[in-house]
Image 1: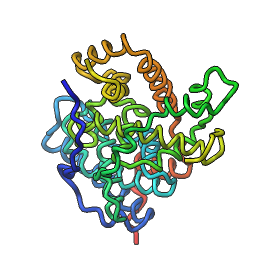
Image 2 (image 1 turned 180 degrees about the vertical axis):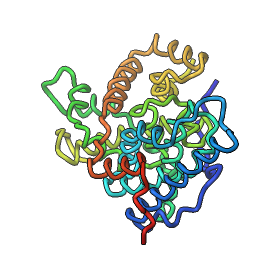
Image 3 (image 1 turned 180 degrees about the horizontal axis):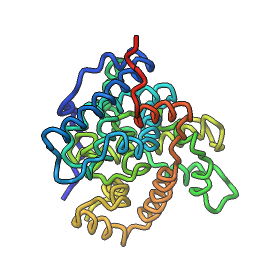
Image 4 (image 1 turned 45 degrees about the horizontal axis):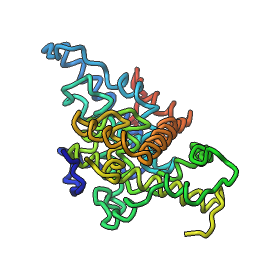
Length: 248
Length: 82
């Protein structure tokens, strides 16, 4: 059985809320968030008090759910946007949208996956608003597909006296360096890498978050990895972390 | 048997243990006879580990307290006061 290699265009999220106001600035965003929190708190009281309409499993308040996932969501936002200020806005967009949609969430067990889905959709909208189209996949990506960091390190032999070339190469990279390489990657390829490594989602879960078929996820994961490999090598060459015969 | 490019293509998913049984065994058959791909797999494992161990950036305290204050809202502090 073969994994489909062809990629598909992103077809858009299942549902979307207009959020123009959220783009106007962080302070408006915070204010709106607080209003929503109060609305929600009142709404919950009314529902349980009057009609007693509650699901069979106890529903945790959105505040608890959000607080438990705040750190990883923030980390995901920074990696997606590559910029602390952008990440702050993205996190706030995410919390507002999640707050609005929380009542419609059926599966409480999948709340972490769901929050990442919301963050992904928010990031996508922000990219769109700036004229970037994150769902599209560059056609010349087949070129990156051929690159092998493993082979490149062996051929270029950047540490002539090392007997653990490949490990020595990887040891060059601090967290900030890897983050810098993430920002050079195509978002459609970077997402699968972030979700399945740093954030510990399975490929199936990551496919759900990105709203793409599993086959497409696997294909993008591979292409993302190739882009990451090339990005790491080029970063190392550019920063003169390795000595090479001639620069590409 | 799958070839080297196909074996390499399946490695990250393999390391994430996300493939169906059939593709996994095909990859393992390939690895049993291909020394180069074994090296590539080892390197993939290290690289994947490096990325996975990347610590996510720490949230600024100022942002955390702003957001947490709002999330843990108790008495409304007249947020729509203007």
